[in-house]
Image 1 (cartoon, rainbow, N blue to C red):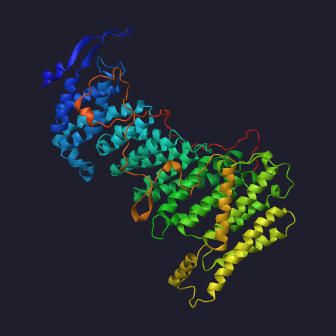
Image 2 (image 1 turned 30 degrees about the vertical axis):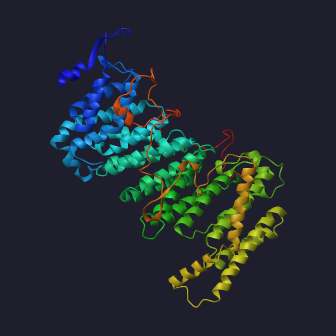
Image 3 (image 1 turned 60 degrees about the horizontal axis):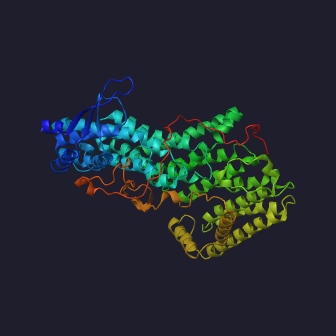
Length: 615
């Protein structure tokens, strides 16, 4: 009864704190808490839940002096109370409402207007609000991931509480953008926070404004994190890209709308740079923020626009135009790393969507810069093209820079030709490239070792074209028979890799071997499985699905706060809680990363003027 519940709190006078009036401190009786837990679990007693949530509120506001009275917990009771509420109260609410997990859905209006909800609703609001308050003050990454997972189980209960929904979105986005470069955070906190964002977008589908906020804020958070990319955090940036691709695919109706808006945003920056032609305008385009966004667009369109019937297929052409303008905006050898990154993204898009994109001329333009024909001033230090956008001026005249540029050109050309080496029209595709390569081979400006690499590419291309020509002499169908053309190319693929395909694989292996030999930090390329992503599972239509719903997150720390007396008696229901022995690593509580679209420069030398025609 109510009197028994009141007796559960032993009244005691509290001491004065500063100039504040004397506070009343009540000690929570562990025996009564055990009875409330049993009543809540067994009978779904709302009165027991109310008493537990009163204690839960005091626990989540521990150390705050806002109330006229406070509740005192020993450390064991505190930890057990927090675990019990987080793990069981959602199922208790659903039992009281006669609902299953996530069963509100289309019946939301009926459920939230029922008589039962009028009794349960205030308790739900108290639980959700206090859990968000706890989450905003937690600094442990594993504990935060555990709380996010428990809130995701209750995400449909947020529907009638718009303010709490917005607060949950804000906290999820903050956690999504923290701990860049931390593999453990990628596997726990980051993936749980983005799952919450996806769940919010799904359960609030009837509220278009809130769903728009979910998608836009997620993209803005990614942009804020992508301002500064280096070898340490590039794995986390790619992991965030994959997460956003998964979240956007939840709502096909909004997928085209937001992808088009995001691409248009970058296109407007390009148009402004072409019109104004100022240092600031160029810097807004040639930044990690834009390059990371372009990689994200490639992933989205490749995933949801590969087939002619898919919704994003019409965006392939405008996206390629944005890519090409970005790559050629500033014709400077200092920005060759940026150009190579953009060209790699185009090649991935071409491969994933099975769309031919002519790139030979754009790739070969890198050999026209004067730095490759001048006598080098020294050997120079090796630097990784994957982690930079702009080459320092002193490095332009080094042997290392020249060798890396030529190696990248040959590798990109080999990859481009390899994608179409089994196509029936490959001889015609390779002919213009062969003509251009002959010009470079006859030129006296390139040194002999560079010509050898180009000659290897040309020889492999000729042998691949001859392979197709020999096979074409035996066919008895015309180009209009698409089915027979497909069978022809399938037969060519089944015969094994083409000569240029073998060359490409060899170049790729040699490049990775050289990188490992230099003992540089490993940088996961976009088409390689990043260690941070863990294992992926097959989703609909056999595609890779990154976000797994069923992967449980257990808080590995034994206690949320340390126990004063480890020999203290443990309540019976706590035996059912799973406790580990490991210590969770503390995560940094960064600020909210949702910011306005503010592009920064990747310039590493502020004193160096930005000259569009600099060579």
